[in-house]
Amino acid sequence: MSPHRPIAIVNASVLTGDGIQFLEKASVLVSDQMIEAVARTDETALADDYDVIDASGCTVLPGVINAHAHGCICGPSMPSGSLPLDPYDVDYQRNRHLLSGTTTLLNVCGLALPDEIDVGPGQSHPLDIHVSTAHTPSSLAAAVAADGAGLARRHLTATIDEMLTRGAKALGEAGGGQTLGGGAQDYRFLPNAIENASGLAVHPRLARQLKEAVLGSRLDKKDDRNNDVLSRLIEENGLSVNFTPEGLSRLIRDTVMPSVGIARRGLDEIAAQAARTGMPAIFHNAAPTAEQLIGLARIHPKARIIAGHSNHSSFTTEEALVTAKALRDLGAAVDVSTLDCISTRWRNGPDNFDALINAGLVDTLSTDYAGGDWDGILQAIHRVVQKKFMSPAAAIALATGNVARIFPELAGDRGSIAKGKRGDVIISETNNLGRVRHVLVAGRMAVFNGSLVCQPTAAGHRSLPLD
Image (cartoon, rainbow, N blue to C red; front, side, top):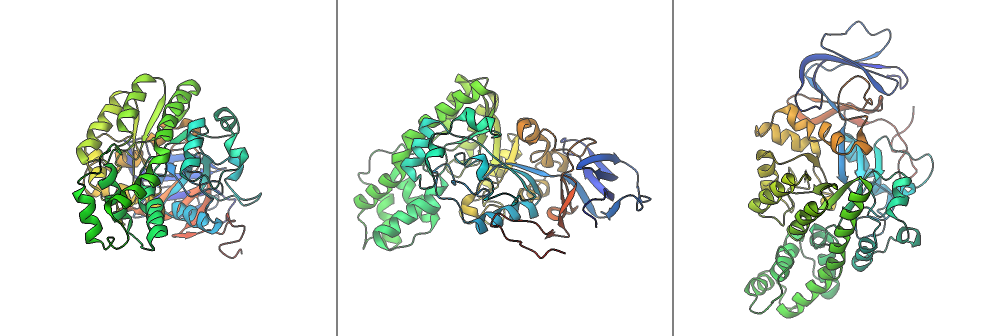
């Protein structure tokens, strides 16, 4: 298959990405990086002019647009401004996204600069990767309070306006699990603090239980007296040799809380900047921030607020539903993330995800990061379709057409299978849309028969031999 010839995909079903249309049998023609035509008839007489892919038994989808991800750039990582991931780890995350059907990705760590998407010239990945900006005084201060090891002077002095001029596609992520006591405290910061103090390794699930025993799910618990839950967890998990309840409580508070108040001010700042600039703004939506986020949606009705990972594990299912409805009523968009709750289920389960989807309260679907254990977006869509929460057309729109509508600065020329749109196309098995066969990015084959086509990588090496 020539990288320069146009491509004809024939004998396929087509989900266009608009949430409604399903073409039972059609052909999709892609040339010059764009979708040239979508025809309802079989166009098999195209071999002279096109490379033909027979997609019998498969469904054509728009490339997935993931507007809330981490770990795919070479600059400071996470809202904590932590050290960059190793370039080989960046490769791994990018390739996982591409192989699972994502063609456009917004890395929302928020404090990296556009020139840090890759480590050097000529290392561009087929996945179209962009950055967001959270460069407000309190967001930067919260990062420093939590970690900040990856931040240099140029990160600390960057501004929202400078970043938007340089190509940032959204504001945020406002807050994060590192700075607001969320999942990153469970899988990284608290386990590290406990191990450094005692030599004991604790599972993230236990770290979360300890954290909530001390601070509550909303980080608003002040009184540790008679903390029977904490005492029981210490005893049952063999921590009593190293910790008293008072000592462990103090360690947890000292680890989690220093950045929280500062990060909350960062949410206020980013909401104000969103109203001023008119750019979409992604917020950490969880039990500790839900009330504040609802208030910000009221105060800034012109702000384009996206409530990230609204299925966050700190919510009870009822809390997740009530919060999402309140934000929707105020004009905010509601995002849910796969996290690790679809198939991995290492720390998170699907209850909040299922409930929000089934209630019709979801606008977009992303992965987030979940310590690198995120599940694929099309895996989640397969779950949605199998459980009959939504039609396949409506489910696909959560990751394509809806995302393009809410983030036109990122994806206005993509998100649908239609003439004139960018040639980002997925071919998946019809019986399980999560099984991706081929991926085209801007009309070029990036994944063929489930394997990466040769490409440069973030680490500056070739992951596959060239022809």
